[in-house]
Every structure is written in C-alpha cells, then in structure tokens.
Image (cartoon, rainbow, N blue to C red; front, side):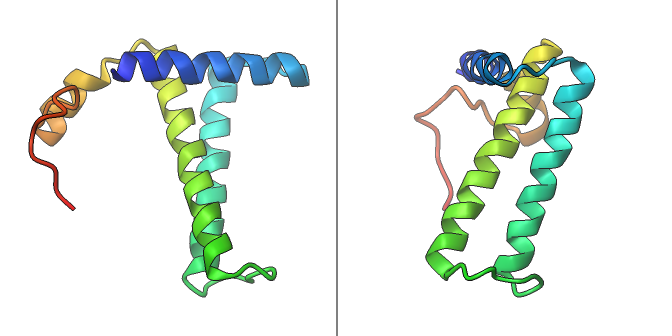
Length: 108
C-alpha cells in the first residue's frame, strides 16, 4: 500500500518537474520537504494566533492546513521512494502496527 503511494507521489512529482523545467535530485527533494514543512508551520502559526491571518477565516485556514499536510506527506513519501525505504516495515517496528492491515483497531 505505502510502496504504491510512494510511487504515485513520485510520478506526480516527476510530472510537476517536467512541466516547470525543474531538475529533481536528492537535494531538491530534501529541500522541498523542508519548504513544505515551513509552509505547514506558517499555516499552523496563523491558525493558532501566532501569525497574520491575511484575511483567512477558520474554514480557509483548516483547508490550508490540510493542503500543507498533504504537501509535506507527499514529499516524505517521495523521499522514501527515492531512497527505497520500506515504510511498512519501519512503521511496524516503530509504531507497532501493520499499516497494510486495514481491519485492525483504529483510534480517534
């Protein structure tokens, strides 16, 4: 499941780079990941009253937060793909559950 997601995000990123004429290498992916985490932090600071709201309401901020989490997650998955990381095994080791088992208990 995660390997497929990694490949799909990687493919989307390659298309993005082709469209905008960007050279995507290992450094670019790491730097882009940091950029996306920075953007996520900026929205979080705004949402929690630590930054200018720029005229955005609560619904807009919630939407922006979702978008930035998606961007950061995408770049993490691309990084994992680029370095052939087995996230399913790592999650099982570190988080002690199998992310491919969709029948297991879920918490709220």
